Image (cartoon, rainbow, N blue to C red; front, side, top):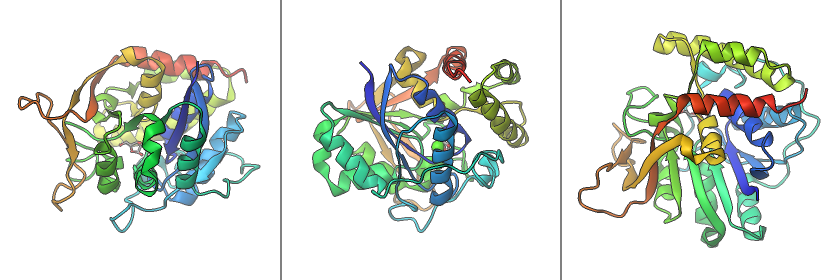
Length: 313
Ligand code: RIB
Ligand code: CA
């Protein structure tokens, strides 16, 4: 039975791959809707990008615009230096034939959860603003949320200036703190995992042999990111951060981790957005988050390839 999910995203090259993977596996994912949040690029652009990518894979999954800025911080620090000014690595896709729905993304999340006959899994792969807003606006949705599996955070290091926080959490640490203290089943797929989800040249070559439109789009889009990351990190490859969440939900055996006490630093201006994990939990404090700490990289990349290969044209 396919799990009902809502993907909350900020496409973003890796978000785009995650969306295509989820759409390719309807036997696993019943995508109730896609909501967008300001992050990699502006809310307007990420929303257009979500519509364009869904159109590319001929999906009619509805898109709902969410929040354009964090709960408390004055604005997002975008990542056009990685994803390109347009958010899709400079790849020009046709303008979408449809628009985002009129309903706000936060209201869609609330309404979809309250109306769905079985508990819903939330899959945020951008800043957690929409998720936090939904939980604050209508806490009653908690009783029909099965799990929140988010891409974000890091036990070690980070990927924003200063190296202490991960982009999604850095952009809205207050929202992240609302989510991880919600008492719900939370899983954190952070940089500890996604920095091993590196798509290397050999897999680019394999991708180039897949004869369908999504693979060709992915090759062109990620090539730009590949070169940018090569300059930033000095090695060839691009990190498939968000696809790790989809792959984890597709096959949980790909990832190891444990339930730990975890909180988000919001008080210190010097380290705001840092995700603090008590991995050993010697004090036996309440463990509020499943924190992933490793991924089977080859197994992960095989899942990515196998899902993209499913597209017939
Ligand atoms: O740190 C990586 C995360 O930030 C990914 O979700 C990427 O898309 C950006 O949103
Ligand atoms: Ca993202």
